[in-house]
Image (tube, rainbow, N blue to C red; front, side, top):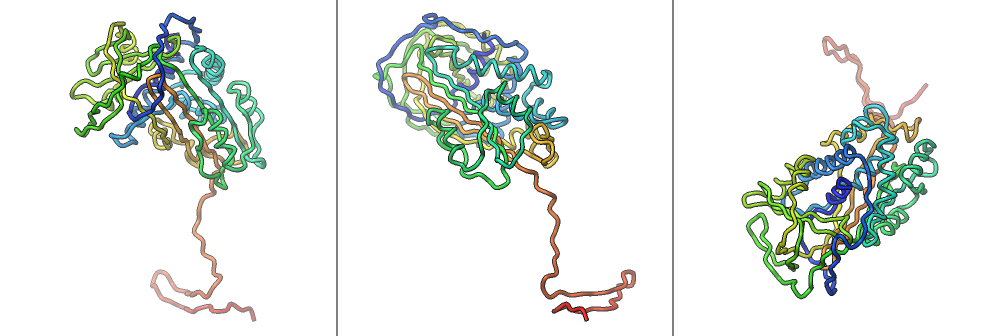
Length: 408
């Protein structure tokens, strides 16, 4: 139970601050008020997925400006790549499994874990709305191995849809994120033959909500030394709190307490980038084991924003290299056509206010036909020169220009 709670926590770690307004009277729902529904996956698999979450964040940070907000869904990316790996073979498959931190698992073990998460996460807490959806899109004239489609349906409950224009793709993203991510693609490129997509939507009310009357303008210190004004929500309540060497942490529950947000606040001289760069499974467990319930005065800015991340370079840094090249081995999808991954991208949304948190992510993987090797073209279809020479002496024997080729 604990491990799967931590997995969703990585999706909900708070990173940047803007405004999101919702006027509501506070309601207090103790963690014990509603029965929880534990989701039992093995500790080893939970550790693998948690390890991937922080490994992904660590590498993504190196690709983004140090002052930019980052809000991503490791779970959405993991599941989308988990679909892709079913169509990969040999070295390509091994690289993706390594990037996913699941090289010690069999394909069946991994697929069964996704199936369990898809079934049980949405019903874990009746007070929290959580939805997961998967889809496979392919062009009508592109043949897909039936075994791959069967795996997508059996393990991932994936819809198989025709890839035609961009509008149905964007509508699917919007429909499965409660309209929070209305667009993921601008166009369907001519050489794109398949899309693999995952959508994740979360909406949870704080178990102990903030009172809107306690929200006030307050300065927020930027890492540059400058300040900006934010809408700071305030409350004094009993929460799980920990103070470690580089940071303090606070865990705030949603609904019946099965889903939580962990807030990480760097100590003087540290940055959140430094802290996240040092996080792994061991550090995460250390944090969980250090949390103790006590009365805390909490100040949390309201914020809301959308983001889009191109993840090719990040995944290459994580060891998934071959899939993005003409040497990709994706014959589990199609055994005759040369394929490669064109792009992996993630669109996200997050909004935090006095009532709770709304978050969404769509991960999209584009698969294209591999381009044939590009050779220089030299077609003499206009007047050209013609020279005959001896190479060792560099003696030109004949020279001419052919203005109008003839045969007489």
